[in-house]
Image (tube, rainbow, N blue to C red; front, side):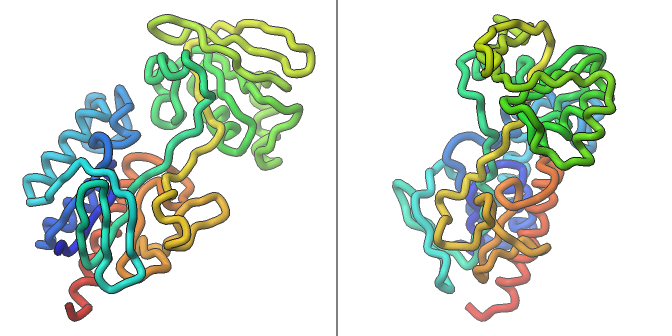
Length: 305
């Protein structure tokens, strides 16, 4: 039996694992795919503290994994298929094994919604991005498009407008869904142009993004816009299928926690993008992981086993 089992090997999971291991807790980290999660798909990161030169998300993930292993974290690539969280001893079942522990930290993350285009998949990290604050600086004085019409899309457009030469917002409706004050800021920003009632049919370019093909939903007209980057901002989907009906989720499917990352179940914590939060970045995920580990260690030490 382990003291702590961490599900998910992104920045939240590895930070939690590091802090747990340094607190002398026996720690198992389970990751079904590859270390780093969404971070590992980022080709270059300039905003993670401590790195004067950009570092790739994959390289940072490997450093996090090696550091966790150094302090004794056991890391296994296994897909968790079921959890028992409402008992004192938690049970984690994978496709091949059953593990028991005193505390669980959920770090399964969230996945950005995709447009579903082949060209989107092919040009990911080659001009297609899902994080304006992560990648916007790479498009300084260039032309970009933001896809979406909600708060995230509007805020991304305003952020990019301070960096980029021109920002197009492509929205399938005839009005934005963002907050009114944000909409007004959009309308008052000269280098933002809104393409109403339209969807992206294709992203152009072989090696890097060179433009988009747009369809007007009212007229059926197809037209192209030459640009250098596409920021998809149509929302995220929390990876909470595993815990539905087991712990409290909010209306959007994110795990509800307090400031200590505690869920509504004793001994169960959540960290990173899987919980509701205003900013989803590597640094905020790592922060969550550290807090969750600290609270898990406190929970274990204060209870009789």
